[in-house]
Image (cartoon, rainbow, N blue to C red; front, top):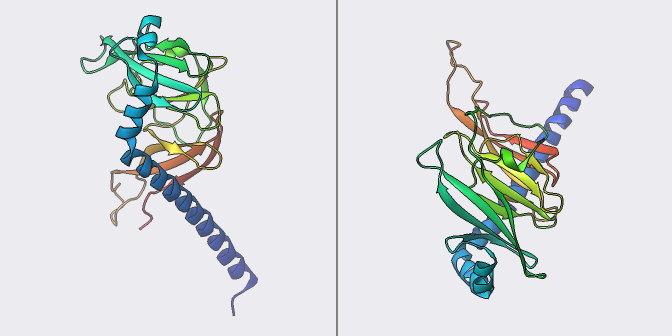
Length: 237
């Protein structure tokens, strides 16, 4: 018979396995939704774009080269690569425009700035930190939060890592998330961002030498950048 101590360890292990299983089920559900959205993405984007008053937007200051990044019933977000950046020949200075579908007002939210220095940024599983819109140096993707007046902006200006920001569209405040890859979607019920990161493997071989390589870390944050939970996929074999 197992001792009470052994039974306790079994319960703890089962609880941990259940948490991980639930996390994976949640991600799979989100992944299926994202896949269905992507499969229909071209048609949806074309339909949304054609429904927008583009001539009026151009007259209001939207560049004709701007591309629709995301849209919902309330807002439409456009990204425009204004010019080549100085810090990297493949990077651009990008402007973000937000169109209120109800009031019909167009606003230029921000324009990325040239970085003063390159930074190695790779923290995970921590709360987001406050920053300003002028701290955003690169943007290649913009996504609207499902249930909040907020915007997720992702970009890479250090040629290695993706910097992700939560921008409040009401007060124009910004939060830098402690992740180093990309936003892969939002949870279905809560609208929380699911973020992708990498970490270096900690495992060693039979001789005690590091095995090297990297593994994936998936993290969930609330709409204010508060850390909720992460799943570390490093192999324990």
